[in-house]
Length: 257
Image 1 (spheres, rainbow, N blue to C red):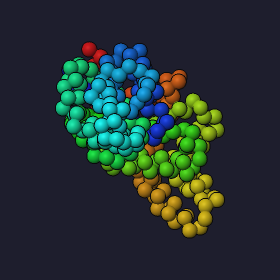
Image 2 (cartoon, rainbow, N blue to C red):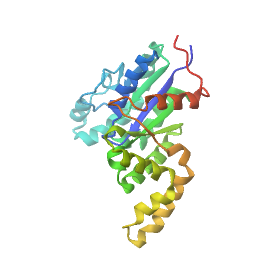
Image 3 (tube, rainbow, N blue to C red):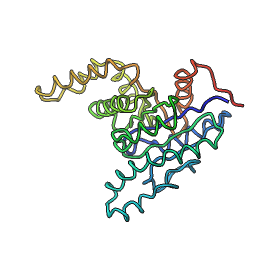
Image 4 (cartoon, rainbow, N blue to C red):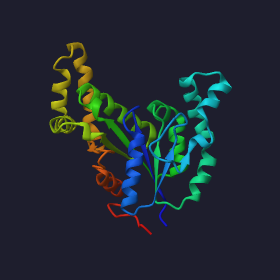
């Protein structure tokens, strides 16, 4: 029995984390791989899948709001910090599953998992060096060059904060026209083309900032170049699976037994 791998789906609100968790689970089931779904968002009101491990069994956003007299945003922050305190109990449940993969749906607001210490703590505690961050780049936002750059910078921040291997995914790629998809990928592959697009209408005072930001992105290009993926038609699932294998097994499949 191999030690399980943990795939953490991270991205901005609305980028499709929950949908991709459900879709990748479906794809893995169809291909005979044993995968478990985990929800780490205590504020999730509904999910497109039935989580096998659910933080809502330990932390209720509504109860946190009532107990501390907080609104939804404040309660989300408290809940994120409480998440770390539940790590031993979550680990006990995780250990009951004899699965090869844990597909982890992280909180909708990226800052709750990436910017606060609880995210890295949970990854280290549960995964023991067997974690991959699947960073979702929202296709709708990426159609604009500044929207793409903003998301790539968040990916860099996630890589820096969580200290785990990363796979960048252009989520909801099925909503893009072929020309839009090619444009986004060309921006990711050619920093000069992205620079030209993003500075064409930018005031001169901000162009040097763009140069500096794009230099950072260019140096991390291999980690940030996204693969197209779709939860609707399951496109790109095999690419994600291949990236997981290359990261941890040198391209060799885990046993299905």
